[in-house]
Length: 631
Ligand code: MSK
Image 1 (cartoon, protein in one colour):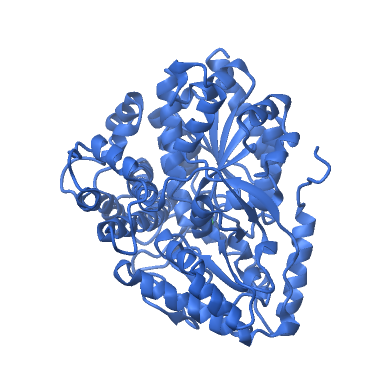
Image 2: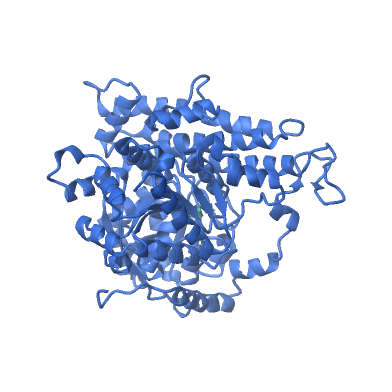
């Protein structure tokens, strides 16, 4: 391994957190570590999914003495309903994010705050959707496409436009199994209707709708979010950045963006870069302005602007605990309400911006596409004005960061592959070189690593340890969300991490000049992974379920993750979870998810809480798939 490169290990990260918690203790701050202790042990009925409170006759809980709720619903019905509700929550959340992006696209204009940065991608999508582009002004086209995309949420008839991107075999499965996603909002409503008291209690029906709901997210709302974000802010291409708390700069005004919707973070980055704002920061005694990110909004601006990533989900309190965060501005999703009271222990301003995510102890600046420039400017100015309120005795930024190359959209990956095989005209613009690497055995397969952190798992351990073992076994990784950030913090997105790979993957990394763990974006960008596997299947002539590819969310925690899991398995990809989705209370539902749905969609879940076993099971599955297709 190169002398100057080594991974940051978990112990170092945990020691840095401990040091920050000492500061927290001094100022009387609460922390998730303390709250976990107060909440443990968790309610067993909740953990098993056998608590029902969907009507006011209960709550009912299933026990050996009381095997049915007051309405007569058994454990399978209760667990199934809870699972579907969980999925609907996640699908609604992702899809509403996608809707906001479509609305931002609708507000784009040549002289406004939001412009179309990738007109070619817009035209390509218009072509797919049968919209005439010839001779049209790009903003007229943007508005037309935004309206069409918004109709995907409520169209009275038909199914999602994006599903036509899937291989014919996959579409046929979705038709046959009656899980083709219709209008996105319809699938959310239908799910909530099915789970109302006195509607569905048959596990098959509830699980089937969970898959359909997931597909409306992954091949609907999330895909709108990803594709139209690319149109507005540019399709990501490889860019260098850094990750972990050491990206915050003590001498600078530190602004942290957190949440998911890039409409806000893009504008904040834009104004933080404005020479007028930098001069203003200098006039207040700072050397400059540093914007860094947490969670998926961080992934968004890292992929397009190289903005550094301060951390992932369970590190959100740490950025405030550094004492050097002037302002943390949030949009939607995965934001701890704890940030409000925590910021009051420091000089930090906690700014909420969306009517969807309003929290106590925050300053609310209502952000909208129409007033974006003015909103972003006032947020940056508020941070600068707050610099002089810092308490120097509380400032401590752990000097810990790693280099990372991020921004591997499907388009960027295909371009990288073109660069490697530039003499073979027939593979240009395809995933064929990647398929050749897999069929020849240079690569054994690929794993999509996604999802959050969860205090039930030692933070980041599962992400990092699994990735290390997979790359050592010549399995390439595409990562998104907080899993991607765990990899970046450890150093696995540094190209020099190739030295940790098996000989085959190392060779591929050298030839293609890529890191072994490829950053594909935020949670909505798992839709990119769906497009990638669809292309791999079309280019190889195999079914998606035959590809030696699996998905894994080892530390997931959010409803969105369950929705994701459902669309990933429904697309034909075996999915491995390191945290149980509250279904252990029903053997019938557990068996359907881990076994029965394979008859419907050619893939299923594996739930394994022991991460050593989890990774071995993934490798085993990949090898089984290789054997099955004779490679
Ligand atoms: S931010 S959903 S903690 S990946 Fe997308 Fe991270 Fe999970 Fe939120």
